[in-house]
Image (cartoon, rainbow, N blue to C red; front, side):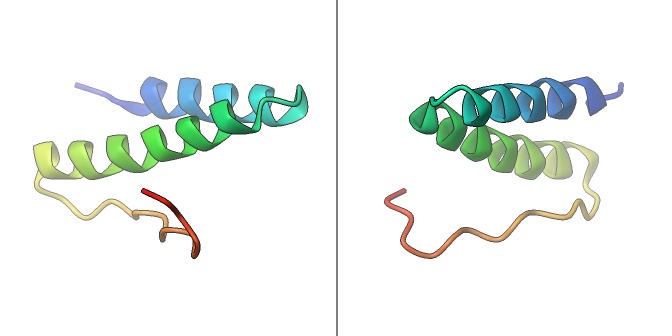
Length: 59
């Protein structure tokens, strides 16, 4: 089963939020991208590049 569409949707949401003055939503979309990357990697038992956490994150 492919998960590429999930990443596409989250990237689009992040871009839209960033371009339209919704920084909290953009941050949550970025967080969701990281979670999705980790979970899909675990499901596939494969190495998927996980973006590093930004310094100063409150998560």
